[in-house]
Length: 251
Image (cartoon, rainbow, N blue to C red; front, side, top):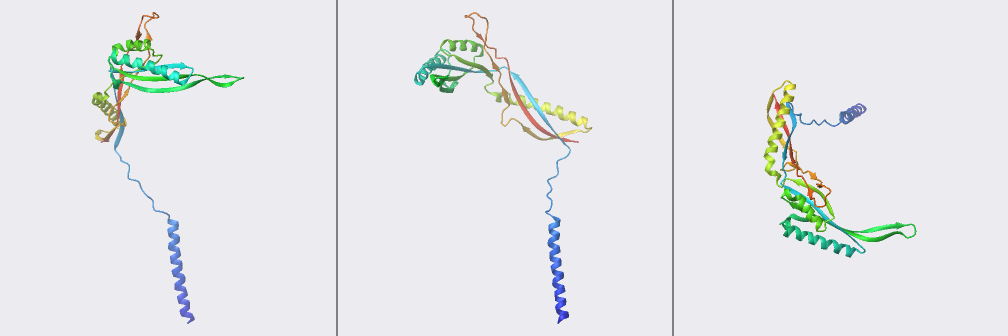
């Protein structure tokens, strides 16, 4: 009986050691490694840039009125009357449509004064109303600004020239960007003593379907100190820019 019991005890001990060893082996081995997909080889990535300089066809004018009065209501009424006069002028005299006149800013704020005796006190209010006017006859932008000033506009900002429909130039910008990418990729392949293969992928890097338009701001310049001289505003040119991220095969 003792011999049999000893044999059974030996077997149980051996089994326990085996199980424990297997568990310990799993702990020492650690988690299995995860391998990422193999990085694509034999390709070259370049960014091609296409840029066009184009004569603008629209101007966005920032024209505003600021009125100061003792009360907020008086200031607001004064500004409203002047803006109404300006809007009528734009529509009747200059033929500007309703859709091309948009309010971009309106606020009424108190003016403060400070003294050691009374501290901070409100002294009057400013009411400001700004319009953005879209105008397409670029030869008369200066005249329009002068007319607005004469009608009561006392807060005239910069003039922003742009292209109203940049999508019309998208194909040209993309073509130039692709040509630029071809030149860059060919130069890299030659330097690496390789041949340039076909295009693998093309991504337009504009976050949209149209090229990016950089509109230039123009400041008003008086032709002379003579009060009879009008404002002269030159539209210049604007840039249409697009970028393509292109991947080519290398032979």
